[in-house]
Each structure stands twice: as C-alpha cells, then as structure tokens.
Image (cartoon, rainbow, N blue to C red; front, side, top):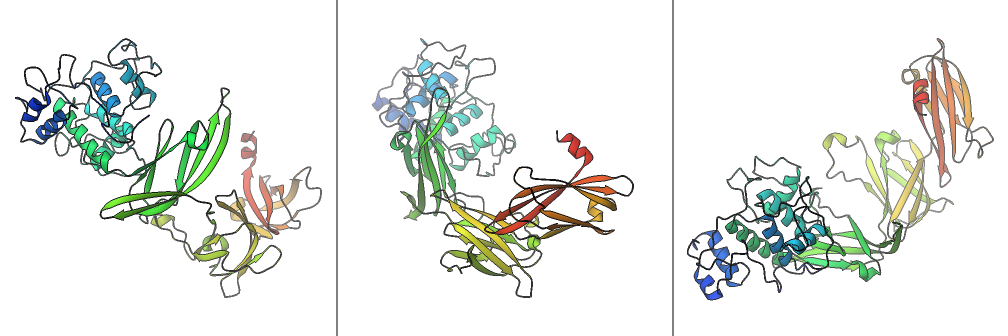
Length: 497
C-alpha cells in the first residue's frame, strides 16, 4: 500500500457524476465560468484543475455548489491514497455490487477502516456526503486521530470527546477545515464540490510538511506489527513529541514537536487458530529536533535499558525518607553510578492527588536484589527490599517495606474484641506459625513471627457476638519481609463465593 505522498502518480476521478468530462488543462487554467477565482476556493479549483486532479463540465462550468456523493468521495480518496482497488474483500454493503463503478474504492477504504456504512447495511453510495462523514474519513485516511490531544474547538454543535470531536479536531488544528460559521461546524451539512477542492488542497499541503518514518511487519519477518511509546510526553504532561499510527501492514512514526522518547516495536504472527506468536521485539530511541523551522525525525534502534523506578512516599512510610543507604542483598554498598535517589516530579498530577510530605524516586540502572535503608536523619528509619529485573529492554522493580507488626484499632474493627482465632496459614507451603495475635480494648496487634511468602486469616470475635476477619499476606523481597492486611465481614465472606 502506498501512502508516501499525496497525489503521487494519481489521476483522480471526476468530482461529480459520470456526466463530468475532462476540461482541457489550458481551459481549466483560464478558469471556469461559474468559479470566482478571487475566492479561496477558486484558487484551489484552478490549481487542482490545472494539474488534472479535478475536472469540470463540457460547457466550461465547474458547478462549485453541487453536492459530492459518498461514492464519488470514496473514489477520489482511494485514488489519492493509491489504494489497491482490485484485490479487495467485499464489505457486503447492500447497495454496492461488485460490478458498480465505486465498488473497488469503497471496498478498499472499508478494508482499511477508513469508511463504514450505515446500520441498515447500506453504504449510501448515492447520498450526498456530510461534513462530519468526510471529516471522519479524512482523519482516518491520513492517520490524524490522536486521543492524547485535547483540542479547543469553537463549534457549539460538536460535543467534546464525541466521535465528531476526534474527527474534526485534527483537521481544524491543521487548518484543513473551518466551520460554516465562526461557531458552527455544520456536521450534517453536505459537502460541495468547491469545499472538497479546498479539503484536497489543504490536506496536500499538510501532508507535504509531515515528517514520517515507516516500519513494515515484513522487516521483522512477521505478518503483523504493533508498537507503543513511553517517556514521550512534554513537561506539560499533555503533548507528545511523536505519534505512532497503526496501518494494515505496519506502523508510522510522526514527529510532532522537539523532544525525545522511546517506542517498542513488536512483530508477531497469528495462525488460523488465532494463536499469537511474537517473532521479534525491537526498542527504538526517537529524537525530534527542529532545524530552520522544520522538524527532523531520527529513530534509532537501541539496546538501552530503561531504568526501573521505586517510589517512596512519606505518607506511606510515616516519616520523610530524605536519606538513603543502598546495599546489595548481601550487604555490599552500591555505587552511586548504579542508582539515582531524588525528589519525585509530580508534573502533570492533579494538585489534590499529590501526597503530602517528602516524596522520592529511586532509579535503578542495573538488575539485582537490593536493600534500601531509608531515614529522616532524626532517628526514624526503615529497610526496604527491592528487586530489579529486566526483560532486555526495560527494568522492572518490586519492593517490600519491612513490617514486623500491624496494629488494627478498635475504631477500624467496629467493636471490642473478646477473643481471636487464627483460622489458617497457606496450606501446603506453610506448616508452622507465621503470625501471633494480641488483643486489648484498644485493638488488635498482629506480629510477624515467621519469614517468607505466606497467607493468613484471623477471626476476631466481639463481646456481643460480632465477627470480622483479617485476611493478610506476608511477602519477602531481597530478604526483607513485609505484611499487608484487609478486613472482611461475614457478609463479605459469603458474597465472595
């Protein structure tokens, strides 16, 4: 499938019905009798007609205010995209037969996911195309959709985050479309031949300025290709440096603004039984720069490993973990070349969601088992076991804050505890005592008396026959054991089955 540039070698079909004939280029250049060449659309019609992209009628007119049908629009767009209109799968629209003039174009666009039919199974081949329908087709055809973007549209007839919003937004941002008034887009208004000429001219200009790099599945020896990006957001937390567009046979990376990030490229096959097999995975570093006002895109395969990050917040630890001593699980001190400990940047977070106090991130550049001893410099400290593992591209971390006991106050339990019963441990793996329980009028204290990974359940009985359960788990990372619990009522227990 060719999409390298618009109109490349494409001789586009007539904009109106089959009654339209080609007007000689010289005559077209001089202008059509019913086209005002001083208007914006007039300049577009003149330029495109001179190139043979659009045509007029034998009487020298262009009929700029005649409607464009959905079939005509499909034929033009398929030609512009240089789609294969012969080797297509029949989309089974009830009003489009394989012998019809527009069948190949409509099928090709439908196969690509660029156009759809109506709920009754028809395509509406002879219906006038609306501005909303054309916007949807153009946005899909030229891979302009980006749900990460948040556009400010002046049109009162477009609901934010609706399908129309995502179809019109990119076109408006790229100056490809305007409204029928300053505040109305005119979603259901039909598209006129003059308007279609403007759409074509503007989208051609936009496409010429886009900076793209394509990757095909065959390059990875696969039949399918997928990709995802990360570390690809500007400091405002909203705008990406580059975008990834999915195509039938691969993906396209598009430069958006200066910055750098990464993306993973995954080539895979799916057999007839729909079994999924990954053939190859590649990691790319993307650098977007601007030179003389034009963006440049550089995608280079890399073996860099993205650091793993462990977040350490005062609200969770109970003190400000301003200081760190990092050792291996065996007790050897770790060089500061292997890790970075710094305040965590909450850029892009909602103000009311940012934890209070000192908040830090521990970036690990090398896989291994570590123990971080955190302290506030005032006598409070805690050990945190951290494991950093890599898949060859990214580092993943897991952590366990050392906890030897948990106190559950009576206010949380909901009643005064009379006695407790340890219901069970992890059956086959634990055959010894792992927790002990003490209770008083103030609450219940669960003490860890074992190590390793285990589950436990404790029943708390009240003085008036009340009953509640403590479900907990212990888990160990790098020799450091943590404990976690949650309360469950008898009703919770019954409803869980």
